[in-house]
Image 1 (cartoon, rainbow, N blue to C red):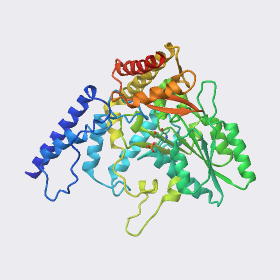
Image 2 (cartoon, rainbow, N blue to C red; image 1 turned 45 degrees about the vertical axis):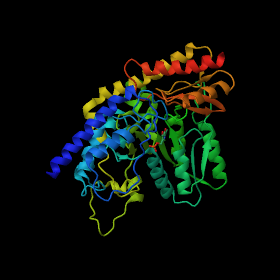
Image 3 (tube, rainbow, N blue to C red; image 1 turned 90 degrees about the horizontal axis):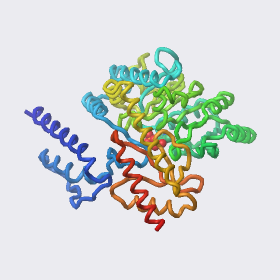
Length: 455
Ligand code: PLP
């Protein structure tokens, strides 16, 4: 009876989630702050399920920012899909700690399969592919975890009292945070404006800084390059940075959290040129590959670069010669993290995922076109896939006004940012219908503000 009752409840919950998804096109993207806050009273006896479900529908869904809403244009997308939810459900059902092959044989196998599938889709060199080279991949929770783990291993590998790390001033703050946590000084090489107005890391400046540091007895241990920076989507030159890393015997980590996924499109294969020089690579399949958070794929060119430093074999665990992911990551426990991607790749196929990525790019192209057609506006840098940064020409004042006005509008979630002292609207499409009516509506809202300011 208990099983049947739980099953019925879960089916009802799934129905409710489905209705929530369907409701998204007819509600506002921002939370409505309902006057029914969640009860703070500790339940001493079980609450009936229908009452809990009602609370979810009346107080939980409406009081959140709707990340799957068509008018959500903030941050980077956290794309999701039913297959990823299904994968998460199966993982929850297995309810295992997949830290070793003994603890979860199928968990280890799934990690290997999805890492190789995605690696193959991205045309990664053999060194990153299980059974072809010395490396392989696994799913982490986040890009932050990936860079922290890589930097920690890089530091132990060099075994020095004077380590120093490098990245671009445009790279994600998680790189600086990792350095802080590990107590490693980090040099932020200014991302420099190029002919497209993007701001990739300048390899010459990187080399100069390294020479300077070496002259002051620092030992370079780690360099991070980014494919698709968070602010403007700049793509660092992996070939040039990789050569420097090789010459200096430095760990070269590539953070391709957002943009890396686009390399599964033949027309964007080149964005990972030079990846053969990388020690580790991270792509968040939670961002662009419909896996939902958390899902960050990490590859290492030689598994020993992780396992030599992260392996611990206590008496209470049986040793084995198989792949044990506890030795590839900082935490011990992990669920079967590859399951959402395993479900997604099977149900969408490579073609389905390519279609999703192309749809995202088309949304960006449309916004770029609309901006370029209005002589009062300018794009601040070359569109990077879906990401378009644009502003009102001239001083920041008008752009800041539009950012403020959109922040107060519940119909849209779009954030402002700054680069090189210039304010801009950071348009990052996430959930676009095939007709891109949400992109046109966004432009209309911007234009309305602009017309109001010009009058
Ligand atoms: N790297 C880049 C380029 C990002 O844009 C982000 C987040 O948006 C991150 C890293 C951090 O991602 P996570 O939340 O997976 O740590």
